[in-house]
View (cartoon, rainbow, N blue to C red):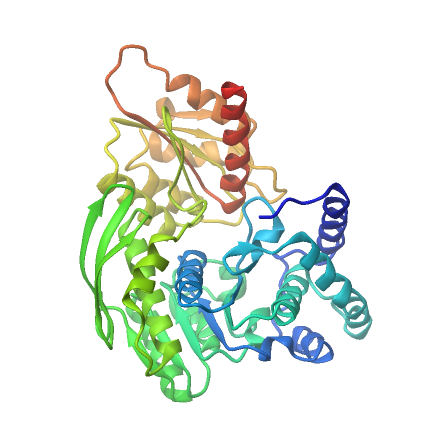
Length: 452
């Protein structure tokens, strides 16, 4: 990110406050009516460039980052919209692989601000934070201008604010139970909503799905005449071997086999994300062959902050944004198969509307002890509530509490000091995107102080 002047920072903060006064991301009015009217009055900026639309439950952000890296390495100007952010809302709008420049964000916001207020007066419900951010991204991308947009779905699909794009390629990552109050109580109901991003005559990439999700997605694809590529059928990961700092992959796509891909991310799920990203880019280019060297360079450059990210060594501190049982299972498998800790101290803070019991049941397999805490969000589950659930799963002797995330990190670091011990010890911080975003800042500041 470029250096931000104090004046620009003040304006960026003021814009964030104005956006946060709108309906929060967690409050959903399931309709495209408002966002459709808003982009229409803005001149439909989202239709001025082709898009790849990425939905599903887990892996959306990382897959979007991979698609972005591949396209950029192939010489295209890219715009990527993802959510939520870890540390700054500017991360959500990325141009050519970098968070949007402060001045560009300010320019685009000034351009659309009056229209946001105008739309508020036209509808019973105001334009929400997420709808405003989505419109802001569309406008910024058109202004840049970009050659291709990589747009991550916020929630669901059919009525998500991003679904005013006309995507050439849709990607649907594994679907699991999440946001059941809006999307449905069963995998099939959720899949039906998420299938709403599959466009008529388009191309859809389907990562590995549970059978009941696959049925709904295939039904929708057949209805709209979309071409399909399914993981395990039309494309496969032929081999995956661990490598220093990541893994080496061979991926067979509908058109080619790509060998010796180095991916600097850990976990089998990241290999699946890479395969889906590669097939999406291949579909986007149509008959044109992909440059093999650009594919290798694109994957080698991929970063995925907050996704099994090693923040520090000695002690090893890993953060992961797993916020549901599916994510916790993938994290657990990665820690078991790709790290060699003798002991893991867990730090866990989750949102109150999540399946904490399901997540902790998975995490207990790799965490020897756990410090439960809360993050700064008003939606964070109370420490006493998380503690009660954790004790049922871990037993009282393995559960500790801290009132804040910072205190929890301090405790884990102190507990990790074992003079003369040859054991390798890891600290694993997880439970929510907000938790890992805050942990990133805390850990960086903590060890910067030690260096100084």
